[in-house]
Figure 1 (cartoon, one colour):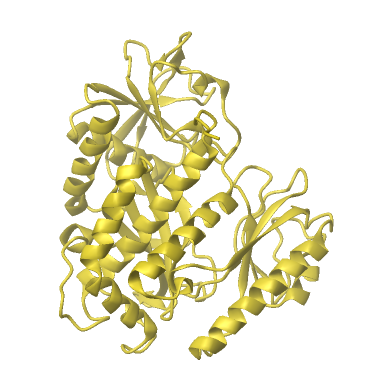
Figure 2 (cartoon, rainbow, N blue to C red):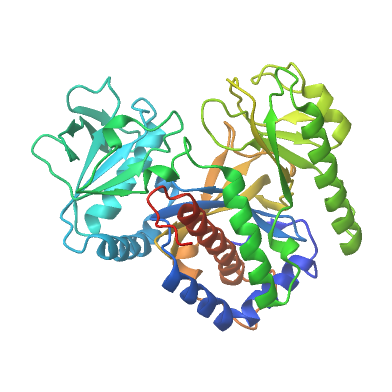
Length: 440
């Protein structure tokens, strides 16, 4: 299924699609060389926005939930990728412990955990779920809406290892983004593999590091394809020491909003784009002190945000688009070029989400929201999920097909951009690894 595109079939995104298809051997070689030098994240999911004139990642998740949205047709790819990932890390692996978020009442999230258990069980591992939630003191069986059950068991920590009663894993898979901080029970595990590493958690990770890595890679990749990197990269700026609720650092934020909007207007003029530019202001990390996501269309509208509690809607034309949290101290904010989505599925605004494990695209889905606009965040209650047909097409593009008319070609292009963000995440993790050796 190719989503309905508002843009004409002769639009720039179709020219980009053709350029990507024509460069496929060079692109695949480029990725192979990158993975010879760098380690891919164990798993990842990338939100992509297709504006019709540019295609760019807007969020990269290193602890992806939502695996339950992948169809059974996608499972063989995921199982193969899981086998490859585990073999690289621990070839003799027998037992895998999954550490989920502490959402024991969220059955939709737990369906995601059940899917992960299924994937790794099919990859040849004994898999159990270990909860670090202090409220889980004994095994807890939870029924899911689809008839499945998951069993959460309290973790047991010894001096150097983490496991369950009568279950000693060599590998621990985190499906917990650690946004509230790194629990001590996960630290100093010297004899087990913890995937992803603790410094991938949101208590440490900063979006600005990822965006910097992606920007540098998009320049190199753009040179490879002979395209303007802007076509695959949103302009961004980092505003430090800002507390919108208290009105601190507002001049800094306003200045960055104005600068990014000016750069985007210049690009729109260069490409003859008749859309109104906007920026998205969001927290530099996703901890309890991070704000939600705010759309701003003019620098002067930043003033309208001062003093507003994070949960309140900001006045127009700056509109609140995400659930907020109270900041505890001035924080780093990201001012990012807003990327429209001109895709529609079932008459709802849609954006593709690409799922990867190790270096492989394994599936994905459209996040669809019938009550949101093309310039708004879709990660809100009311969103639905429509599977992408990656299982049949991600690595089998159709040369010669008319641009914009071939599902395999469109999905291959999504996969290329998703993998580019995955390479950026690998650079980001290397740069922030507290145990990395530093050479002068």
